[in-house]
Length: 237
Image (cartoon, rainbow, N blue to C red; front, top):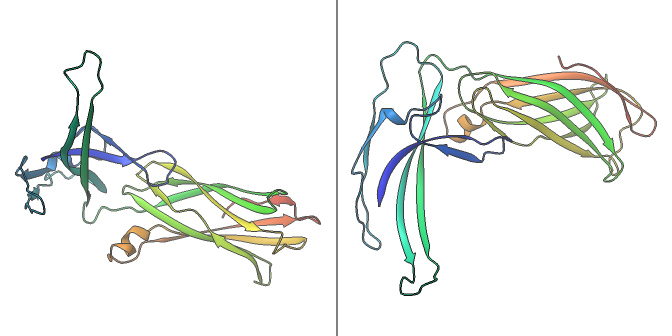
């Protein structure tokens, strides 16, 4: 088995899929800060091997926010080949496991996001109201964001509520928040309403037991027609 570092980042789309790149080639890389030993080893069935690592953060005042890397453990577990045949097929099976590194520079973290371009659309098939908005990580650390929406009248009576998809974004990344409401089972009467979006930017922190992150709240006014159609959507505030 061999051990080696690489860079990683979230693939486009914001669903948490990861892409990998050679070490020290991305803007937020910390792979060059990581030293480890051993770099290669053999391990018997049901055996164990301790790998020690150390992180040396450069003493550079220009560093801020989050930096990321992955330490891969890779083993070639099988080879199938038929060299005795003139025409043959071969298969190399490689298995690797990765340990992700998230390093944040103390006192410099900005976990912020921008939400705009709210849209609501009523679709007859299926009979649902779709709610979408653009999300952009405007901070300097990775964000795992989850959230909810509420549609309520001016007296505060809630007519619809639901959850948005969970988004994963590096600094500068953009993705789409999306949610929906079953208007066949729970129609929303004609009238004027407020849409309230509540987005938790610190879900990853709470899952890791590191406290809570900031909550971002946005609100807009909408008007719904006789047949449940969206007549007007105001700007997010």
